[in-house]
Image 1 (tube, protein in one colour):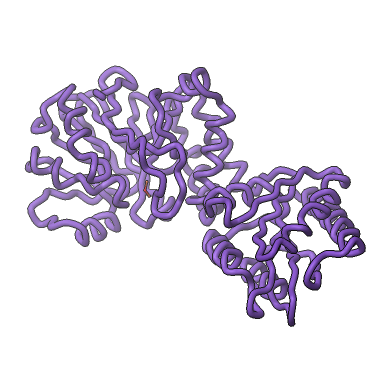
Image 2 (cartoon, protein in one colour):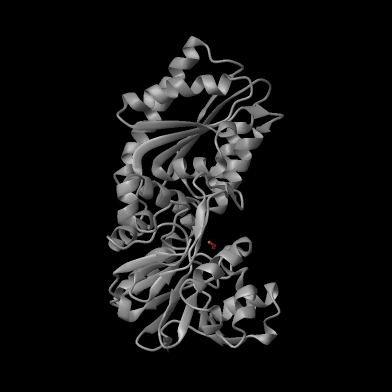
Length: 404
Ligand code: FEO
């Protein structure tokens, strides 16, 4: 690879990670990219670095434009490992450069590196840096998605370097949204945005709304939104902004995700009549078996639907372990604006459905109770109960959906 020009003098110098399939537990079947950017101006400026394994590649990409020793400013928008862990290799090539970072970013950087030898300047929202013909404006975005996070706006080019926000885990031969829509499809890109938002940004919906409104109030025109992962938005940056506002505002499909696991297939047998009941009430439905589906994919399907049904057998009086893991993971993502119920089979005393409700209530989600439990194996009569349970739940989902 070599540098790719976004606009006159502004380059992508990032790397493509075709092979990563496990991104700290988040499944990335399409790999990802670590994007960073170089601005050729009177004072050469680098925005962000990349994951340590790829330091040599970004250095090579920088070198295709300019010798790294010419870099005068290095902006660190975020200190998570995938963006900062090659900073020492970069700084070794340009030791007199100044690093621009938030206060919380500096404190974190100090835990990863010996920063005593580097020039560091703390920046906050509204601070600017003139690098020649261009001006950089810094915008702190705490908890979007780490305390240290910020974005950098290149005023004269109208480019927002948005860091993790608006990104997607896609490794592709193309860099821009219009190219991706042509060689693959816009719906695939949208799906990757939803996946990324659900798994990383779901807890921060309120912050996203506030921060996006703040950026809009600043009146910043956006020709491009350039995130630190995946495809760069140049043909329609407003699209991804609107998608974020919609998701943060509670947007979901009028559909139900049945997320279940099964021991001897009794709980699984319940899912078909439940699904049929939901569909006969005019609501779309998707069925996801946890042991056959990576956790992050199940989270995405949960996020797409207004309603969720959790199906769990009872094992030793508690929830099936994969379901317990899923609900704990989901609770950490602080989901909102979804309605839930639970069902499952049991052989001795039961207990899993009750536990599932307890966990769902800890999240503060709306529930439909008391759920449905079947002893040992669903009989024909039980299957009718499952069908009716699905229908009743779909009715509640439709009512709840009206609020949005
Ligand atoms: Fe892509 Fe928060 O790191």
